[in-house]
Image (cartoon, rainbow, N blue to C red; front, side, top):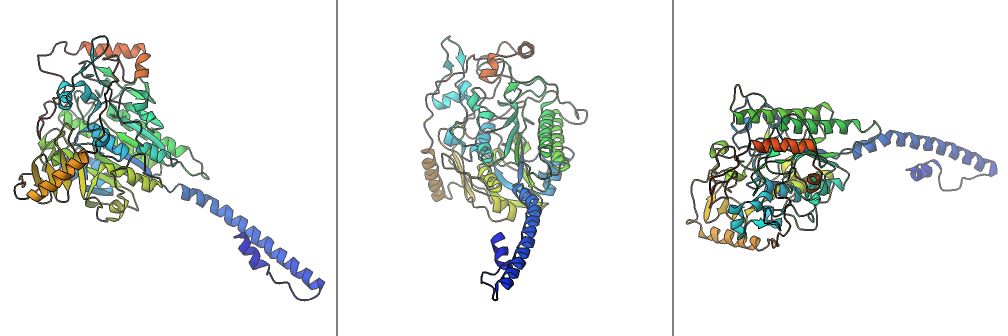
Length: 548
């Protein structure tokens, strides 16, 4: 700009005339150049805040994930609207996705979100606690591990640290990254915990299903007694409150801090806040409000809705509305088919009721409010989509399965996805693939487009489709890496608190609180029974109680 103004103010040709005339021309040139330089200075002063604002244009991302909520439970999918006004308001402010898919249980979906890769690729289709459960281990031809003292214990299993997580992708381009809630990608070794996998801030619990009021996991399979599991920045903390409320409060606090960290002339650091609630996963026993009118599960759902409203309120209150992608989804299907109507199946199955989940997204100015999108999207697609929105690079040490869905979500373009691989051989559940309108589940074939409730097996009518999809599943299954020896064991088999380092220095208050919980637990179990559900057999699993 300066060179251009200088050329305009002072012609490059030598002025005609004698020395005095040439000197006057030089003075006029200098005066014009001085004015030009002053204008440039003012332009730069004016533009500097604009440049800072432009650097802040990368969207913040707030991703809230519920746990075990059924397709039919939120009002926007036909549930009781009294229970979910905030979820429904979010749906009205954004887009409702009707074919958003996950894996069929907690940890596989979370691993897929973290890596943009199907769960089978890094054995995240197996949960960490599965390696302490005989009925699950039998599917791998394994038995319970025995430590050097002759005690039954769990083999250590977690998300591979070589993976590049979505938190690392966003951190690499300057995002503040936080998790407030349930991790479930490893609960023992430091490198497997959230701050070893790319998060700047951690709050909540590491393992599968915490008691909402005393912050213990009811059992540490194969041990059948409680373990404490409540942490901030990977140190145990002593708090009072209902975990759903506490998780929302932490997320709201972080959003408030983000708003206060930048002055008027400095770009705010974009943020990714991942809020995986444990609600409405079991155990659901003591819910702090609404039980005078609703069942405990309904009350827990309404408390979850309160929490979602609190987080959205924090986004709006602090001026982040326009520049924040807010997402609410669920990790897998509900425990009963009634929760998942009109879809067949439950959590831990690959019927539509186990893998098609509620999902809504809001991003004012980008996503049309009150819209519906029928595009097929899988949770692995969020990593490359977030990377694109953030201006980051989704690539990592391994090829990803996720596809950038920005154009599909924002502009309604057709989904580039035509295939989802839910399970392959070596999984607990039946090998399952969806390709176009068809879904092959074991030996059953369904036309999901014509028969979304999967009432009719059409395998005999389409042997060519069965053959093609079977071959594709076999080929994908051949890409599963070896499991390895799983030689690392949890020691002690029954810790007081999750996190190996945290357990070594567990404070007295923690030990006392865990002992009080353990006093209330059964000391004997009938032969063949356990406090956890047994592994699925065939296509189905039947949950009793709250599915813990």
